[in-house]
Amino acid sequence: MANLEPTLLHEWLIRSAQRRPDKEAIVCGRERWSYAKLNGHTDRFAGALADLGVVRQDRVVIALGNCVETVVSLFGTLKAGGTFVLLEGNTRGRRLRHVLENSGASVLVVRRTQAAVVAEALEGLNADLRIVWLGGEPNVELGSQTSCVDWEDLFASASELTPSLNALPRCVDLDLAAILYTSATTGKAKGVMCSHRSMIAAAKSIVTYIENREDDVVLNVLPLSFGYGLYQILMACMVGFTVVLERSFLYPHVTMEQIAQQRATGFPLVPSMAAMLLRMENIDEYDFSSLRYITSAGAALPVGHLQRLRQLIPQATIFNMYGLTECVRVCFLSGAELDRCPASVGRPIPNCEVRVVDEQGDPVMPGEVGELLIRGANVMQGYWHDRDMTERTFRADGETTMRWLHSGDYFRTDEAGYLYFLSRRDDLIKTRGERVSPREVEDVICELEAVRETAVIGVPDDVLGQAIKAFVVCDEALLDEKRILRHCLKRLEPLMVPKYIEFVEALPKTERGKINRRELQAALGEG
Image (cartoon, rainbow, N blue to C red; front, side, top):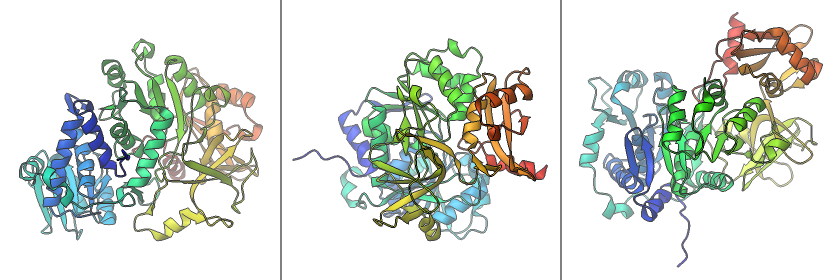
């Protein structure tokens, strides 16, 4: 009989546990969990959820942060036939309330220390909810429709799953595996619906071009609530490698030491992490010899940062990637391509196609600006309980009726077909009747070694329409406005040179490490 590949996410974990039961799956602090142990605990959690009344496609919200219990909870939810929803461990009451209400969750998994946040979220909320408390039940009033259970008690009383696995709901790959909520820099967070099929397709594409192996050790400090962080776990279970799970990048020197201690071969980061890493004192004294690759996603990686990373860790292949919550990854650039077109985010990932189109939906010529459209098995099913937004985001072309995901991001391509991210549609600066990409200006400013980070936005101007303003975080007091302007005048077209430069100590960030341009705009408005 043919050895068919798994079609459900949790089946990849089961397969890895069968193949390499003693192989380390998760390392978190002092805890070191094998694939067999992880698989066994997820079985128990699935049985516990079934005992709580969870049925096929019920939503389970998990807000524990980066820990082994999060991994147990998400795979246990899948084995019980449910749909997991991951939130940050420091989620605020307002966001938690929105997610609970929007998702219609039947179970919430949280820590005892989050009791005040949970109480705030549930105040006045009419929800039939079971809460699983990690660390013991708190002494807090949560309403008559809410029942509570302690994590340890739940496991102690859970039904044995092994002989009754077939009794649990049998899902198909079109069923929802997860609802991933966006960071919501404007408005309320949207729930991105991800099927087993789409998540497996995305993970397979990524491990294919990264060439992941069983002997990889990936050091992950990214939030598991962030698709980029979550996929490190999914990819590990697919291939059978080890993930070293860190809670955050709050103390960069600890992370750098962990790379050497754990002999990490892979290190996923976002550009803000690269900026912090590159400004560390004595950074060249750390041992990075084990690193085989580094990936960057979540935002555009400035070319200057990319070049310095390559100088610092020359043996590591750097993958510069672009993606959306709605489809995880779209394209990547690596290897010799980094020398040929370092400002590009590359070409589409395997099993994914793209178009760059004008406002009428017609493909643009190389060098022209247009919106990026995406089509592939990795694309989401739509937005949870938001048909209007789904229909605005998914639209069919006029010729073949094929549906494309409209990214809302502006791109251009070169003659060889490489993609260049320019900006979010709302971030593009319109000055002197022309459109200017913030990314291109930021890349030039970041070429100056003293610059840590920069963010470029458009500000109202009676003559220009919008003037370009750059916020700059730098190390050296010697780096003044005139020096930055001289550099920009040498490297940019006149209309792209900033009119205003403001030095700041730090840039506002979203919880996922992206620069929050909306907050910069709002601060200007208040000013």
